[in-house]
Image (cartoon, rainbow, N blue to C red; front, side, top):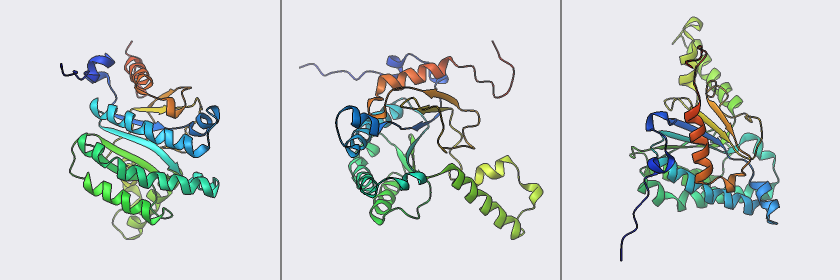
Length: 252
């Protein structure tokens, strides 16, 4: 029996490596609407969304994306019904355990940004285990924005800088953009080149406000559970066509 050949994702995508974004961030929206469209409970939409995470993470790793940041749970999400939050936290625990083999197989390094305070102990335990297990991996960094708020992140950064000034470690005049960048949760990860938002919403929802200053934005009507590889490829191809100017005159 002939062995099936794996399709080269770069050849399938049809975009030169130098045209791909190094860092991608995704606002994964639409799980609830997907569930409603299919006559299912909201948590079943979240289950479908979690299943889809594996497909997108695996494909981004195969495309040698340097860093993929996923908006998984915002601080505002604590305002959702208690039952939904409990199911989400259980889902995170199961995901962190279930995906370890896939993470290791794809040489992915798991990271988390956001406040740890407030997250249930089982989530923190499995998160720390998976982060530790994958810490030696040298492939794509998978960054979960969990219990995350960009405004809270900036507040925490300002507080840490203020403490350094108060301690005499630096003067106010020393504070510049790099100082703030280095004080953010994402220190060392670099800014996203491409921000993808699913479900057609035209807002950034308090996500990476400092970091996406010059990111290319791509919004798709696809709900997150329906955002498969073909949708990812559409976003990457559109990015490859963009003329990134960073405030300079057009090169065209």
